[in-house]
Length: 284
Length: 284
Image 1 (cartoon, each protein chain N blue to C red):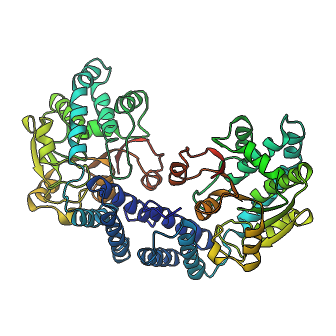
Image 2 (image 1 turned 90 degrees about the vertical axis):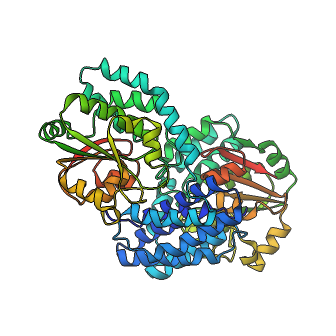
Image 3 (image 1 turned 60 degrees about the horizontal axis):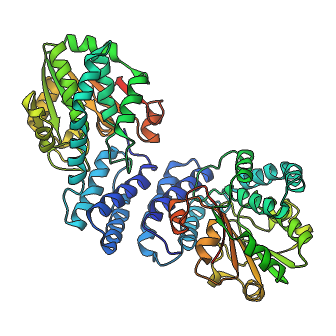
């Protein structure tokens, strides 16, 4: 997905939010905004939004000398999600279609995103709403069939907190399918995206292979990823890609990818012919 | 009111909206955004938001070679407001406190604003809601008392469409007080702000003196206003200032001013200790 002119104000909002989390020094905040204003005209709109976002956040991390402003927020998100683990497991175990419920919960968990939005709604309300709502784009049956035929699955994570929902999904997939799953995190902290530290924090490393994609983009920007990752990306039969960033960076890639996300901005929603807040399970 | 860093993304959104109204040429849209990105770091945040907005819109008007992109929208707003005139007059005539009702309607009409927002809600719903809601900041009693003691009143208009609500308010003030009122419009088109053309369109020029403030800022930026205006500004006993732009540009000025506005952005609402959507009748 290319970057739209509408993304420009959004990048500036994101820069301001991240900078304010990192520092209350207004001079640094102004300097950050000025640098972002200066860099944006130099970046090609043909790039995907996460590629440009990465350059924007690099400025924030440089001016604030803080390479992980969302660290505390990420820890809190993981803790909050972990506190819901027993409840989520119970919902799945007592549901009529545990895999569908798990998929919906995984998408509900994608609400924990500090890129396109300042805050997310109450997580338990999000969960309740997800369980009651249909998927706005629904490739669930195809997903099940493709899973049946897959021996190697790549699961591209998105955010801290959400990663606990991914763990629950992988527990269910491990139960339902005889498939090897590899979970992928970002290489270093970027926004509130999940890294190896988060995978360890929610115990994901105990149940599945977890690797870094070798890139610090808030997405899966293939030309920035490691060889190890790219080989797995190529060799996998099915790829689960969580979240808007992965959709934005991979929407023009191959048909093995199943996108699991909540639409959180008007442009992504529009591209999907969906509405903001819709739950998407898409295979192209 | 000074400009906040939060205003920067808003200026870019405004530039994009105005440019898209003026042209569908994506190259011009990109050029506009690039120029706005380049100019913003050079502008002092100590300026008021309308002063910076003016520089932003100048770029839009230059790149699109269109000095009035909102012309058609302004005409439609005037027509819509005029179509409600008999209904509004009836509401006032049958109300228990016609002047208070008029003030509330005048503030409700301030929703017709294409600066901070892309669209406004349904006008009749806005009117119904205004009639049912209290003023969030309520200097109505002081306004009445000050009107009693005033022989010269300056009424600073804001937007097209809204200007019909101002006409109704002036009809009521002319009935209730023995005061000379002068109504003020912007000198040339800027966003959807009211100019002399709009004053003529809604028949305001038939009932009151209407002058330009000599400036094209979307507000009342005193150091850009004409001598004629400044003399009246100085000599008036009471000044009615409509809308966010006039509040932003005059909030640090004298105590003769009564601000009539709907709070339409988080920063203005915050500065007023109010909420977005609140109706404000403020004297400082």
